[in-house]
Image (cartoon, rainbow, N blue to C red; front, side, top):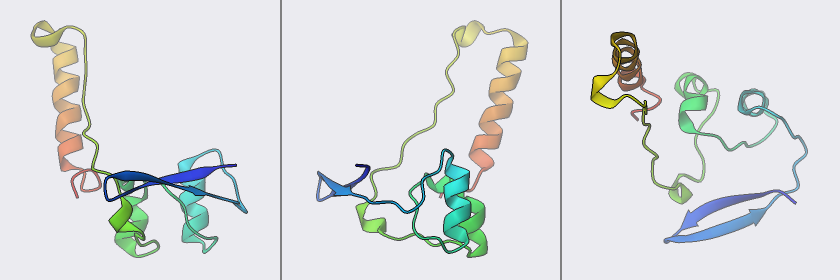
Length: 103
């Protein structure tokens, strides 16, 4: 049986589910929720467009875990090839500018 896990006063709270709809992608679940099919659980950045336009709203916010950082990891470190360093710099700028990741 599927379950959702929440953080409640520092402890994990497990809630068993009996879903009426099961999807294989987060976007399909987000689309279904925005169409009125019920609740879904996803990362906030995945549903950012729907949250901004009001198609979805956040519920159970008091039970969210702490935010997770995003890391860009590459093997070469400071001696990376210019193309790798250029991509990393590009990706960092996009990630920092993404309001869904920085809210």
